[in-house]
Image (cartoon, rainbow, N blue to C red; front, side, top):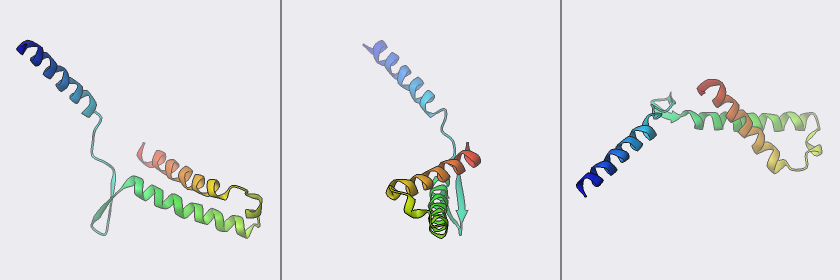
Length: 90
């Protein structure tokens, strides 16, 4: 019984070591003394770029051609956020 428990603890320790091997310090930005996660900054930049895309499409009068705006603009924001994450933090 004790051997079985010891073997189980060894496997649990091995699994924990494998699962935690990829953990490292999260990328953060120091903004006015407060640390913000990098993904939050990427999302905010993506939202700003989606708003800029909206304004450009309105200025070019192409916004009427977009039927599913509720899908298009969040997709633009997500695309920019993921692109920034891949460029700077991959």
